[in-house]
Image (cartoon, rainbow over all chains, first blue to last red; front, top):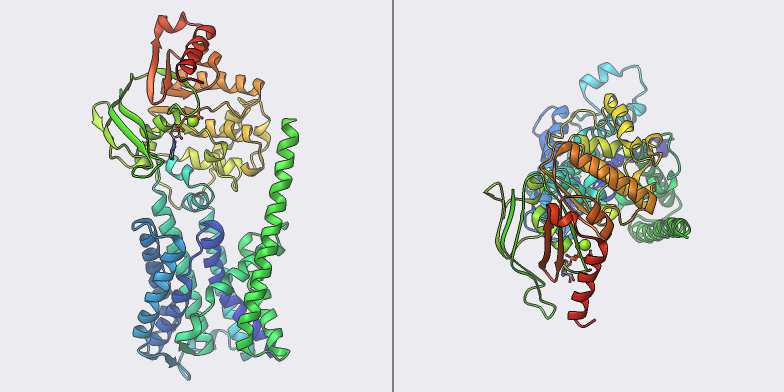
Length: 303
Length: 257
Ligand SMILES: Nc1ncnc2c1ncn2[C@@H]1O[C@H](COP(=O)(O)OP(=O)(O)OP(=O)(O)O)[C@@H](O)[C@H]1O
Ligand SMILES: [Mg+2]
């Protein structure tokens, strides 16, 4: 039971980061490595704010804005300075390592015994009737679903349509009289805002900031997105964002099982890498096959 | 009035593949003209349209609209007043979005893309009406992803999308090339209707000499970055396909192939 709860908690927290990666990787077609820096930035901001006595609810908007700002910088580097997408992210990720250390003041900042989003007077009085062990997961569930719905709503607006269009075919965005660079920057901002919020929640659930919590974030995000979108490719009952959330839960579940079976977390990185490669290759296989089917159809039509 | 003055354009400058496409190129289009542009492959037709729309930069010379200099104006700003269908059918639409979503995007062109609903349900009927003019049955496929349509169907949707909002110029690059003969005919007639109704200045590139003659009020032939034939009004009406074919062949012979 404890294992299940921890998988749910972490899976749902990482799902928010996964939604951010979904925006960059799937919608914008932009492999954004900024994520490895903006996730721990959320943790650093949350811990420093809470340790200074700020109300925990404040950490969410502050983290979103900080993340959006960082995403905007990545976008500006890519769009205005014409640096390749992957490199823009690497530059920001590297810069953020120092920034995060500066924010937190040190490489490790615990916030034990302090009031967090999951453990404060307001929560206690509101959710007093719920057994304590379920409270955290419930709060995380509500936040994640709320964010998912907000993102769904945004993607159905005119501005969201542009975001979907720019990753699909950026020529049409120009034809519509809109600056495609601006649309990309907006997308990167929203994505990194979400990732930073995810890091913010992670730190409050774990009750510490550590400079290394960001390492490999982007891989976890990509794994969630790819697992979610390829497992539920044919399902149209729910939105793709839901698939991403479930993908994140599945990923965290697998990791927890692997550790349960005696793997150390240092072995885990290698296994993650291998799994990830496998998923990517399988994903590509499918893509190719779909394409050839379509080609054959096209061909038959012309005959 | 659209004026291109003394345009120079080099591709791959400074490399062994350097080629000079335009050198001292002049071109003027009057308001309300419907220009058909013909010319062999690689004669610079698409490049000309790209220059006008700002998709590629000029190396020298100026581009003006009604006397206002546009040479350095950003491509996306120029497109606010330009409707455009590309030679490549995948460029005019978003494959992962539905026909309805694509048309909604195009319907909002020129206005702010804000946080209002992307699809305006009240407009659906008019989208259906527009689509039914194509005679492709697309009016019943509003919720189909455009990526699942054939290239020709996509090109037809792209034509509608490019002309949904008020524009000063309509730029068509072989927009019927991917269509079957019958659909091509339908789309050409529709194009003509749209141009007449909107009274929009149009430049249409085509390899179909019959369309070039039948539609529009001016005919231009390009060759190696130059305009080698330019007929309008009566002069154009008196031409026939054989005459154009003859000029085509003569050029090819002069070039030694
Ligand atoms: N991006 C580019 N880089 C280098 N050369 C180019 C580029 N685009 C066009 N060219 C060259 O410029 C010349 C004109 O090309 P353009 O596409 O304008 O021809 P076109 O008249 O549209 O031909 P088609 O009828 O085949 O579409 C060609 O010789 C082509 O090789
Ligand atoms: Mg061309």
